Amino acid sequence: MTLGQNITTLRKAKKISQGELGRLADTSGDLIGRYERDEVKPSIEVIIKIADALNVSIDYLVGKSSFELDKDMLKRLEDVSKMDVKEKEYIFYTLDAMIKSIKLKNL
Image (tube, rainbow, N blue to C red; front, side):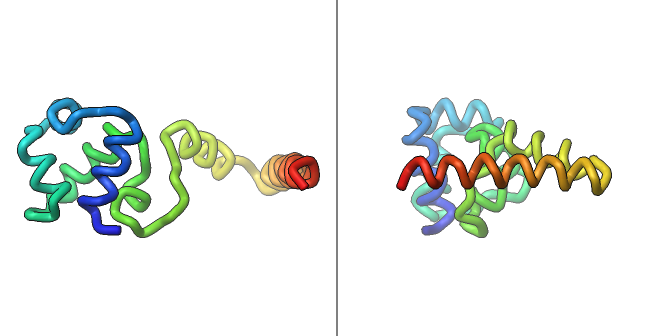
């Protein structure tokens, strides 16, 4: 998908109008419409504001990643990245066990 299609999909999923997204991203609804139609490309500063307004990572917004990271998930990952090696191992061991349990339950 294009950047414009991603903006449209995310905006509609969050039930936000073009005008509201424009206000949240410090731009206009008309310009959001032009971005969505891929008529113009936003600057990196505007992309950052749109990603923040839609609560997704820039990579996800521009289509570089198919993994949607919201601000809460990013904060958690940042917290884990600051831990020492032993703490990280414990977190990942626990997380892996929980993921495995959920996968087995869903079989």
